[in-house]
Length: 570
Ligand SMILES: Cc1ncc(COP(=O)(O)O)c(C=O)c1O
Image (cartoon, rainbow, N blue to C red; front, side):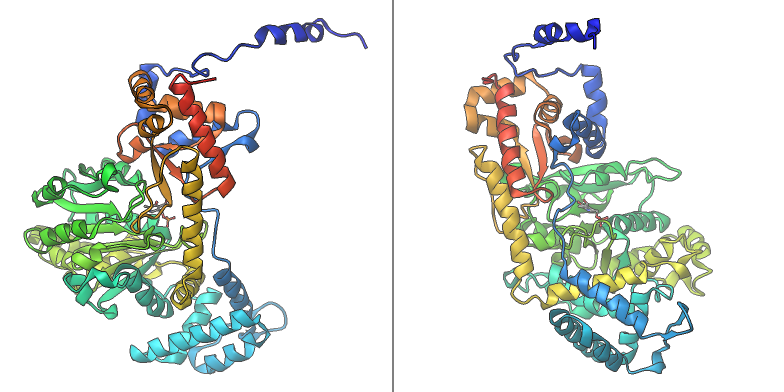
């Protein structure tokens, strides 16, 4: 076949096009106007651009360590849940074909029903479930509830044949959540000592609301604080930064649908494992600040706040700032061997928001839980609002209560999650709640902590593998989650190539140019720390979503990328 001119010309053209690598490794510069726009993007939006660049023509070449979605998950509780689904369907009365009547509470002895059905289950699942039933029965008795009713609740919740009832949390889940959450935020470390107010509180002093992940929990809290006039347009809230970027982006959204809040940053010190200096903590004494929101342990910094920080803030909240609302997002708590919560130091002002997404690998399931003390100051603050506000709030809630003023913060939170009018059909889907119960009991019954140790060891392995390629020691402490790491690029450049390299990079380039180059040339996606409120040149890597070998590749890519920027390109 005769060749076209174009085809014939191709080899020549290709030869001509081959360029020697530029002395700088081909770094593309970003114009200042574009830099400004990109700099304003949420890191999660910027990520989409970086992914496109990193995929290039071959998507499989990309390593995306930008997002925190873990690549591990808990298998056992899922298997029990699948077995339980079948068992619960079989325990119901069948018509001729697929139509089934679910049983009423007094129809059966549910322990017998379950015990006979689980005979066909694999042994490990059967043992686990027997223990779970025993746990639920004991907890039911100790809270003066009928054990049979609790097992019936587990059955109906698993089937999903009834609205969440009560909408706040299913009764059986409540019994597991109170142990799991208490152990997570209050019973973690004997060394925490009885010197903190929360350590004197009992499991039953708290209540829970099951939500569609922590994201929903956080939103419900924001909305309820706004609806109940504790956060008004123009109010100030404090954030411990750097922080998961939605906390920076959401409060400042303007009315009518937003919050119009002003942010005061309490800047954690990256050189001290993200501890807060006293001068930052002192900002909370300013009465203009109505609430303090934080992620503890930190995201993107991956350390728990120190006991000293927790106590210092607790001291302020329990004395001169009893009106300060504290929201603590503890998604990463199970990853840190040492963790101090605000529930320890100022339990009456604190709302804890937990997500199962990371530790159990359930991001697609949307599983989370909110925890508050039954006797909390937030309820009191609402009840002490000026008469004008009380009047308006009475109108908001008069369809759900004959005495709206008496509604607790938790009752409002649940009703507000469905704009009050749909409060009676609020709540997380009951099969999701049944699954949460299994995950929580899995953790409570894993006395050897093997699952937890495996996750923690794997994250440690990954972070060590990556930093080894960077001739830098990862700062692994008992407070570290190792779920993320903030790469201090100038410091790593100095460790690899000396002080001059560090200075060359920061005085000649922008951090975004580094991230784009890393994506375009080395196919690695990481996120800028600046979008989380950190200083430029800190870059967030998630250690949770790729394999150990991938983190070696990322370490090498980072080293080569730094070489390009330091002018050490070979
Ligand atoms: C600090 C923090 N809070 C909340 C979330 C969202 O949790 P969920 O998946 O339960 O909505 C994330 C997810 O990355 C997170 O990092």
